[in-house]
Image (tube, rainbow, N blue to C red; front, top):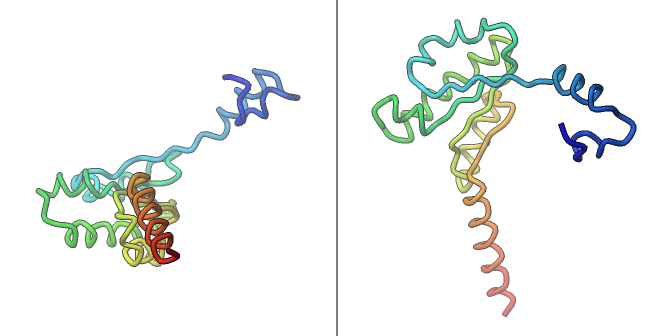
Length: 137
């Protein structure tokens, strides 16, 4: 444990206090990365101490035999409300940041968070910036 930003730079807190706080605030996020995990979702939801599940599109799709984006999204769209109904939070990963409607659909289904490619976001921002600069010329 260092005295970084997460520990208020070590100001007003001892290492033992910081360690105790961190240990009491652990977020446990099991990953749903395999079609077998989807089949065992009720058992996973029953695990004590699991706070949030994260459904990973790419790994899930590979375990499904790479059926295509639509089929993977269909399965993910079934998992999200099941997790929420099971009393856990849920996130979905592997989203294309250019597919804002798809990301919004997962949020509408109850996803608490989504993960997207940072490089994809950077690319979209750079393309938008360049388009706006060119339009201003």
